[in-house]
Image 1 (cartoon, rainbow, N blue to C red):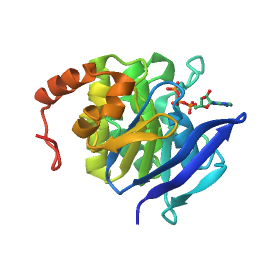
Image 2: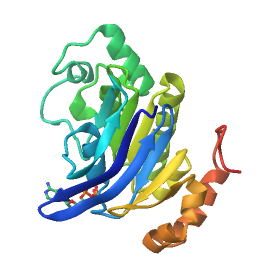
Image 3: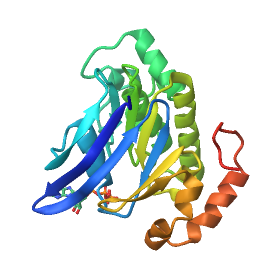
Image 4: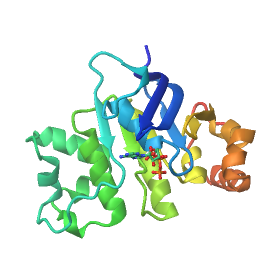
Length: 240
Ligand SMILES: Nc1ncnc2c1ncn2[C@@H]1O[C@H](COP(=O)(O)OP(=O)(O)OP(=O)(O)O)[C@@H](O)[C@H]1O
């Protein structure tokens, strides 16, 4: 059974169709990226998957007891609050030391535990938010544009961290991103959304699909190839 699946999901907002007959399934341990233009329904889809958006048609099927970690779009802890990272992770529920350390470790943020939230850089903040989503050892991580505001090396490092989390914990990752060339090479599967699923598949297949090129042009193909060339690790199923 898939961890979670959407079956012919339609979501209307203010009388407009945000998602139309979207079907997808996420399997254990895979990294799937949703790409699509602004307003194409990416955030709506993630919200529907966590149950925060009620579909007018179709349904979501979750594996019984499925635990989900979610990083919403644009979440920024209030930088004016004097609070350490450790304290932030213990709100609203107190967490055991072992749980905190494990989440921080997986997120590559172990060195940040005693730092003030307000003093963190953008990349460090993203790792802390990842640690927060990892509390409770979720089977599925949902991240909505988690690298907004990071430069390209920062984004690439964040996606490598996500791969490490997947490899270490076995959780599946479903994320939304605009950084096509960086994120696509770190994904097992890419879903191109524009209100409906335009195309999906392995990153190289999607990058050359006519539907994808109609939305994003051909420029990212070159960047994708360049990034692959610099890839310093391998995947079982990496495209050669
Ligand atoms: N709270 C809301 N109320 C009404 N309509 C909304 C609301 N939020 C989003 N929409 C509409 O739903 C559609 C899908 O929006 P959504 O935020 O899911 O797109 P997105 O692909 O995540 O966009 P972006 O890349 O800009 O974040 C858009 O037409 C948007 O205007």
